[in-house]
Length: 127
Image (cartoon, rainbow, N blue to C red; front, side, top):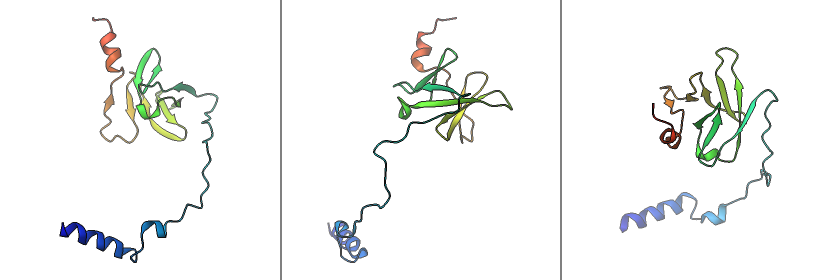
């Protein structure tokens, strides 16, 4: 108990014994009530991310991420290797290679994310 009381005392002393509400100032930066819609170049393919975080690409379900559900993503074909670069606005999310595997940008291990969702795999006919 003494340690927690001492911590509270030290914290208030750090801001000159003022409370946070006494020193708070609202940001001078203006934020729009609604962000502008994302616009992609005409030669890009646009896909909407489904509620389960997948997009449909060339007849397959590819998991991108549930956080983007309901958002448009853009795909542009790479001229050097023919793979498709997946973007959310100006942010490169990753690449879809020739085999339909989604490789996340910045993943140093270049781990491959499953081509199909677990549900799609269960529904697939057995070979």
